[in-house]
Image 1 (spheres, rainbow, N blue to C red):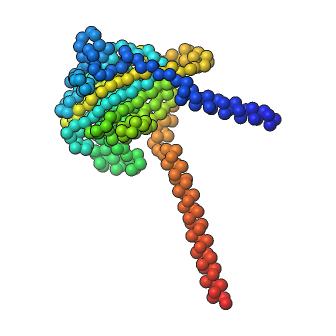
Image 2: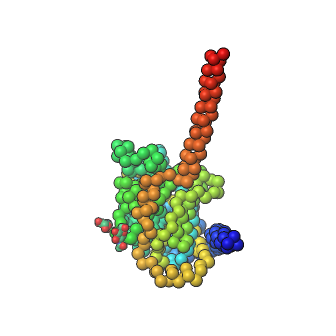
Image 3: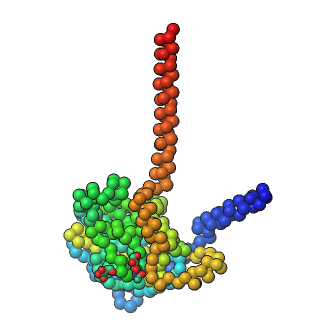
Amino acid sequence: MLFKSLWTFTVLILTFSLGFADDDHEMEEFLKREYSLSKPYQGVGSLGSSHWELMGDAMVTTEQVRLTPDMQSRQGAVWSRIPCHLKDWEMQVHFKIHGQGKKNLNGDGLAIWYTMERMQKGPVFGNKDNFTGLGVFVDSYPNEEKQLEAQKKRYTPRTQRIFPFVLAMVGNGSISYDHERDGRTTELGGCNAMVRNLKHDTFLFIRYVRRRLTVMIDIDGQHEWRDCLDIPGVRLPQGYYFGASAITGDLSDNHDIISLKLYQLTVLRSQKEEQEEEEDVITIPSVDNLELLRLVQTEEGMSGISIFFTVLFSMLGCVFLVVIGVVVYSHWNESRRKRFY
Ligand SMILES: *[C@@H]1O[C@H](CO)[C@@H](O)[C@H](O)[C@H]1NC(C)=O
Ligand SMILES: *[C@@H]1O[C@H](CO)[C@@H](O)[C@H](O)[C@H]1NC(C)=O
Ligand SMILES: [Ca+2]
């Protein structure tokens, strides 16, 4: 009996450590040049030769691909010409958002795409609405939170956002991005990211492995990735296009892409997993348990760390109260005794 439970325990431990090893070590990366965009941007924007195509107001210089200049009512994009059939991948985006406008007098932001459609203008950071696939947005203007009244009614300080805000959304061709609410109604998750007018380099990292979407940012100039969102059960078909786009309105900014680096990840899969994925081919993008995800985000809204600290401080508070109680009681006891004698 003891032996049996020990055995189970060992198997459990092994499974766990293998699981972690699998995530951290047994994954190899290969830079895929055909899906990457980097200096000196050879042939980008010219007909035929390059893997990347420009659209709208986007321009190539020696230093960057400028999606929009710091001028009103512009939109631009750069799109890969080749559909991507990789199962697991990682995109490292080196970008820069900068302009003359003071804080919150700039806009509107940029987006990184993995979508069925390409080269279409539109209101969603310079891409069409009702897109099909994944969009990761760096939204630099708080459209909704500018309407102070609406904000006070809807949100407690905890659920208010600070802009620029990074947000991910999966569209299936009939889901509209609500610009006036900064995409709140369709978001999968996000984080704030003070990325504007910085001297150091800023990066965004999008990883898609085993149907798990992870977004991280490196914006403090420390060469450290900070978690932004991490969601399992994100179903994205193969054969979509990578792209980047940006838009300005009444307010503007320079939205620059310095590089897009796409890595193929080779992940070991068990035969069972392989088989399951072969039988369950994804044709329309979707996210598993979306309702549950929303519920957890809106109702709970507390991260593990904040729960930990809440519990910790509550306990410290109790201890403190007990100590105070004991001190007061003994004091009172003593003075009572004094009165007796
Ligand atoms: C797209 O998603 C919406 C909302 O989840 C759903 O109502 C709709 O049926 C989906 N459309 C397709 C084509 O799957
Ligand atoms: C997007 O989809 C919604 C819902 O299906 C529809 O009402 C709207 O007209 C569509 N918008 C565009 C621009 O296609
Ligand atoms: Ca916005």
